[in-house]
Length: 148
Length: 117
Image (cartoon, rainbow over all chains, first blue to last red):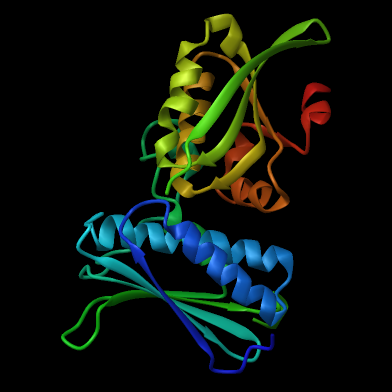
C-alpha cells in the first residue's frame, strides 16, 4: 500500500485510559507505511500516547460523554497528528521536570508528559478552544530527524 | 483497556550479596501503583537493600508509570538501598535517561549485565 500525500486517517477514542494504545498502533502503522525508522516510530508512539492521556484525563476529564479525536495527516516527509478534546486547552505549560526535586519530594513525581512530547517530536503545540475550534494538541514528526 | 501490571519477586545472590528482583509484565502506567510501590513496601528492609527491576516482559510504559518508578527510587534511596533496572527497550532506555533516572539508578541491557555490578 502506498500512502498518498495529504491522506488522512481519523479515529475517535473513548475518554478512558488505555485507549491511547489504539492511537499508538494506528499511528505506528501509518508511520511504518511512510517509511519511518523503528526508533522514530517509537518516539511517535510515546509522544502520541502522552498527548492522548492528557486529552483523556485533563481535556475530557475521563468523561464517558466525550471522545478524543486523533487525526493523522500524511505529507511527503512528515506526519502531523492532531489530538482534539472537549476541554478549554492548556493555560500554562508545566515546568521542565527536575529529577532532583522529584527525588526529594519537592516536585510531583508525575508531570513529565509534555516534556516527553516536546523532546520526542519535531514540533508540538497546544491550541486552546475558541468559538470556531475545539482545543487540540498538534504534533509533527519528520521522517528524518536530521532534516529538522 | 489498561492492561494489569503483574509482578513476581525473585531472590538471588551475586558475589555473595543477596539481590531482590521485581519482574514486571504487562503495562507500567497509573494503574501500576500496587504492583510497583505496594510490592516494594511489602519487602523486608534486607530485601529492599539491593533491588533490580526487570522490564523484559513489559509491553507499554507511560509517564505515569515512570513516575511510580521514580517514587520507588525515592523510597529505596531513603531506606539506603540501591536499585538497578534492566530489560528496557532501547527507546525506553532513552526515555528514562531523558527524565534523569540514570542519576539515581543504573540501567543495564539485561540481567547478567545488571548482576555483574
